[in-house]
Image 1 (cartoon, helix red, strand yellow):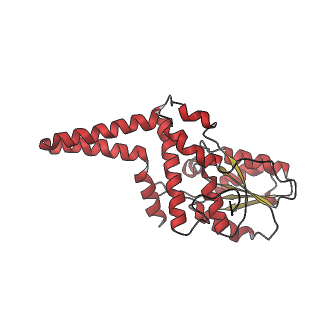
Image 2 (spheres, rainbow, N blue to C red):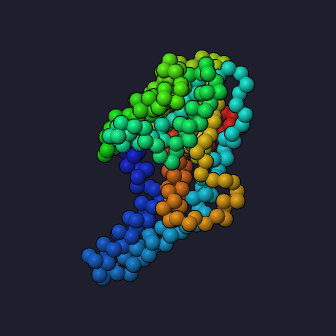
Image 3 (cartoon, rainbow, N blue to C red):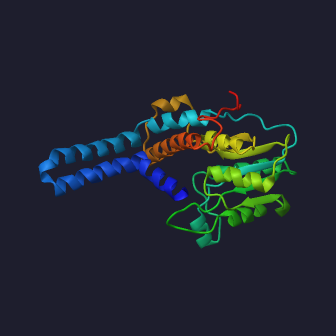
Length: 269
């Protein structure tokens, strides 16, 4: 199932679909000259899609509702039992090859968790994330994350590493097994703002009512609805991320992995 979902998400990304249209159009032009009109139409459609998706505000418009769903509020004033932060900010294969923790554009998941951990010196800090790659198989980055946390001054006895999960659903299931949360305990969940709705819905469904702490924002607010991207690749990345996340929300709800189609700050909202 995991491999199937990874392949599906690869295929449905708008940038990949646009490239497929261009490729299919060129194939028709070369292999079936009598159908040149169709080939030109497909190739042109794919090219226009790449340009529009890459430079227009579509990516911002799709990301903003996800990022606004769980506004960041004040940290709880009571006792925090633990801080859970989701993987996806690390590059396991390069980290393993270089014997160092290599971070990507979602590094705020880690830095924010460390800052909160310092503010709550008695709280556990829980990393959840295994190896999810299909082709470049490598060990989980959990050990590198653990070494980083200790180097950042977090005592080893506070650190909990979960390295079996390959997706958000398994993050929730495996973490709940590992920490066994008790009623009345407060656990913070740190992940990217655009990923928070699916993460919260999945943890709630697993019986783990976490307190969301979004980070790694990609938008500023509604003013980005009119913002053009100055880099094609960055615009495509935003659009692909948003579309993948919306599809993930729908799929998790249909599969019974989330407590709602579009989880809200309160389970009943």
